[in-house]
Length: 282
Length: 282
Image 1 (cartoon, each protein chain N blue to C red):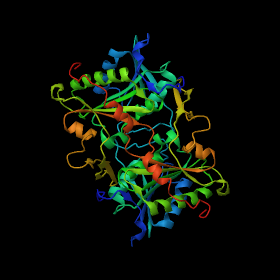
Image 2: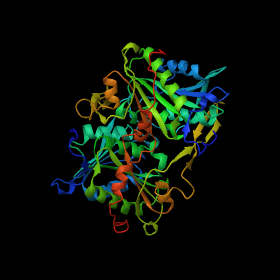
Image 3: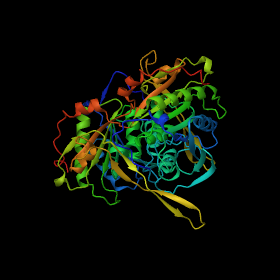
Image 4: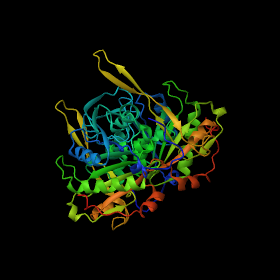
């Protein structure tokens, strides 16, 4: 993949002026057979040439994981005019890296991930394979969007999601995204007629409070299943302006996410800390 | 684990006034036999009671991954006065969650991860299992620090790292960390006498440019190994004030990392975007 030009800081805005159709990379973390993945491929094909890659098995919760200790395999499932589909043994981030480096042939104009079966709002972004793939796009300076529907069921209804995805893709193609910033889009599980619109939000302050279910296997050894429920730390009323607030109020939430994770304000505080060096204790 | 009190926003600063010795959770992503893990346990035991958990197999590159599709097992390796050691089949983040919920019995006062064999500076934080565990601590409002030495070798020399870790732990115990903010500490691979001090830094703008090595297995099927090298996007001179700059100049880098990944400045720009709703395209 060619290097990202250093002097271009908004990506995507001029895409529609190109003579070549945009090349769109589509991926997900629910596996190649997921209904939401097929939906997103269909929408992407309205906007350009599509290359899609997914994993053999579901990769939910894989976050930004990469495969180091075992080799990665990839298989071409389909290769037709304007649409290629690949399957990989790797994680969503492996798939994105492999696409950029080996499969695509040219730099993609847009990366789309999802449509995830289940929410990736608030702190769930930390664990999300869907958003891991999106952040890998952003690190590589490609305009990247993750879509998630608040319905875990395999046969979830993506009817309203299609309209949301078209509108957000249109906005990103028109406006572009700055380098290192991507979008986390979450969609309420409602008919389109009941969705009140799109809200640009901040990530709600919350976390997953874990409950582990302890069981005993047939050999008498114990094991745990991870379960848990989301706990919102925002003030009563739900934190107006957060993604959790928007979703609870029947809006689509769109959160811009940055790959620079520095706590810049606290860094200024830390610079006042006095250290006594490192040699005294060595 | 008891809920984090909502009214306390700096954690750790008053720890030394407690009558009970601090409880310190130690973890890593290089596996239970890693030299750096044993080094960090030894240092932690100077400061308090220690519970340590690691994975059966190395978990480098596992980022913030959690285990959803298979159950997690955990084994008590050691349980003596002031020190317990656990081994898990899960990821580093699984181990942290399981410790909080099931193993520790009380809320830890500090979480330490590492000492990693190899750098976790700049964009490497996205992929790092060491830092995934640290961010899980921060999401749970526990002061959390990740340590990484710029030496991948299993027999790396952690002599200078011990002094660095003691100084950073001392600072965090004294000053505390705000909720949702943790530290990413990287240590040059140099004797203590050649390390020039500690620098509080921002995350350098960079990425891993992947190279995949394609091979053919004995059955004639191709597979890929992920390789690649780090590419620094900072201006010539290396980006003064970044972790990459500090390390190249023989300083220890300490970057405060936040779990709120919202791009707040760009969110203000986005709020000017006009959307035409979602129903038109549905």
